Length: 342
Image 1 (cartoon, one colour):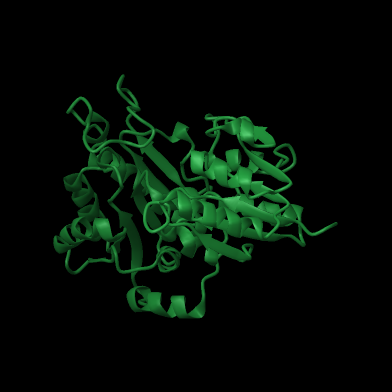
Image 2: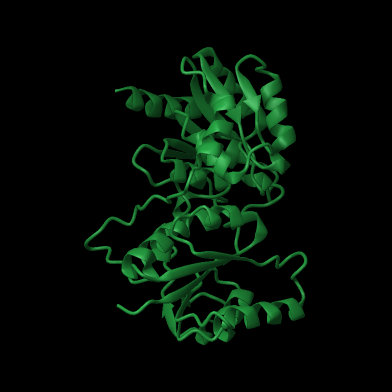
């Protein structure tokens, strides 16, 4: 089989990046002697750099130092010099289409709902009823009849990273649970007071809690942890993405909003409870390993109000969150933990 030079374009957020990894892994299975490169944004470069299936990572700072048209043209010229045979773009933006079209690959692949999709040589139907991983696998002709699409993302965890995490999770006598209370969108955030009630219940059961997230979640995580000083620590903004995955591998469970930590937990292959406030699992971003569960209050005419979420509830009630009482979440947690103990 001739060597393929493949470029994958994924310049979306962290969760999207993690959910692109199974497609990259399967590309390597299809083209075993291929070279697979990735074009991504600065905040997700760490994920792709730690995939054993990725040869080279191009970082495109499209909202910062490279947002100009001149920078885009320079990037395209650089990519052309690598003479790619195939370009896959699960990201559907106009910029991704322009890059794929003019990087001069023999074949280009994306979805029929991509911006200016007619510029791609091969277009697959974007099926919004499927999980994002399954949608991405359709781009590469995955045989769903012969194999399960639920492929977990594989990430390299180095000994140095493991040693770093031991500082937080090295006590063999403790049981750990991670809680990710943040989100880019406020209407995807389970209420702080509800998270606190759930956290207190877990602390009473002798679990030690890690409140995790990015720099933007630091204040929220520190506030929640301050109520449980002997049973928790706030690590938001203190760990790299790969360190976060390594920490999750030490945990019995992750409790998360519909946000990136859910997908990091798939890379760690641990049980996850994902709480859906304004969004729904049907959008295709739910946890898909066998140990995980979701919780969502769906008996509302206004839900879902948008695929991403908003800074505030459009009708000022936020019932999708407030109707999900802490007791309901605790019951789901108990179901997961009891199954893990059997």
